[in-house]
Length: 451
Image (cartoon, rainbow, N blue to C red; front, side, top):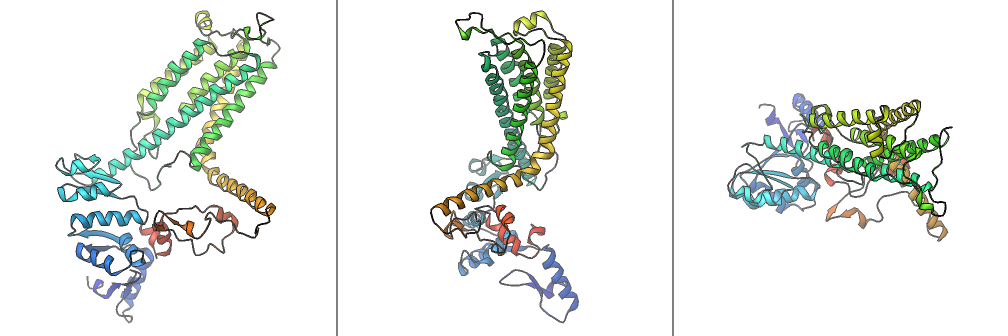
């Protein structure tokens, strides 16, 4: 307490400084606070209104107060809603908890409004908590992150399933062959549907992590993961296609009626190999994209999903390694040699290992470099086009088209101070429309660590 009376905040930067420069202890403590950023600001409603009336809305002091503010006391309903709007203006996602009628305006304004009672506030808030304190915010964040991770996992699974089946059909159409009705029915109804239904039954992870999940289906990580797995499954199916044709026992599909090229029977060595192999691809796609920690609990805690996967693995292995005439007739499958069946199993295991290693270790690490490379290619093409048109070609790469383009959505997104001196690879990592508070944090002493 005695030390606190000797330290104040600078009125323009909100950084601590010692009121008495001769007090060595206070000077050292103020420097430590400024470096660590472990301090905050408490503001009353009257002071909040006065500060924003006296200062320009775009002044740094107002923004720093919003970023350093931890306690806002004695605020009217209008001031609460104004606070939420100002936080949103500098790029924050604002959550507000309230339990009375005086909180309705802020609950409607906030990106996430949580009512702590079932009174008037519950009508204005999209979420109502039975827990009468702010612990519900943590649970809501867990559920939200689990939901978006589950949605993206199911999206990637369905997209990859479509590509697997599309590849099988394209390869078979080379000889006017197609999957049989029984094969289509088993894939869609007894493989894809149970996996897709059970994938979303995983519960949220037990703790929050600082890193947020991707919120866009077209983000670098989502597209790199999806396209990488698409390339792998197509490559393995094409490999199986050519390996089958190279076998000495392989018989090329021929039409039953030489005058009708569409009379080729669906039951052949090629369709058998691709169908049996693709069954494992569908199954492994559901395993690879069933994301666990840090946003969802492990798939081993989803017992319904485990039961479905175990049942499908057992059935697919039985169909592959222990052929039964009844099932083979139902699914239009040819009998093949035992050695070839184990070869298909080995290819399926290799495909699974490649997809799993890529999804867990490779694709997340190459997403950002790959995005930078694509931006570099795009910049090169645009530079070449400008050169051919006789325009100025000595323009450094920038995601901003013009100075006016920096202003987005009414907020001023400042370009970093070292923009002009940054290398090309660093420039390729910058994005248009960065949140303004992130740029301000980089300029605040200890801002990132405190935040």
